[in-house]
Length: 99
Image (spheres, rainbow, N blue to C red):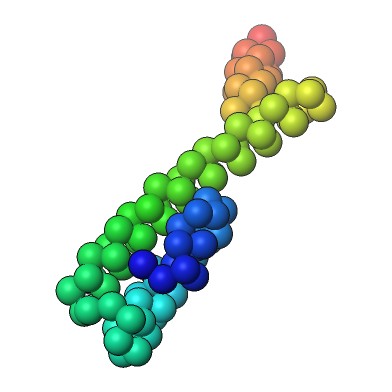
């Protein structure tokens, strides 16, 4: 595996941000330059795309957790909490109108 590709594989965020098309383009160039064989390139591309998807999902999950922690510290209501309160207000409002 080329040094550049190894570096890409080593950086989780970099791998998470790279697209399938970019991976395939990079591998195609390696095949054209004779750095790797076509068969190995296809396998490498599949592996990197798979790793990229997994890393992207991990990154998104970690980011979501950090956002939730920050919001909890700031004591900001979640959308689901606001929706629940709105339903309660609507229910109370409709009950009051019936009286």
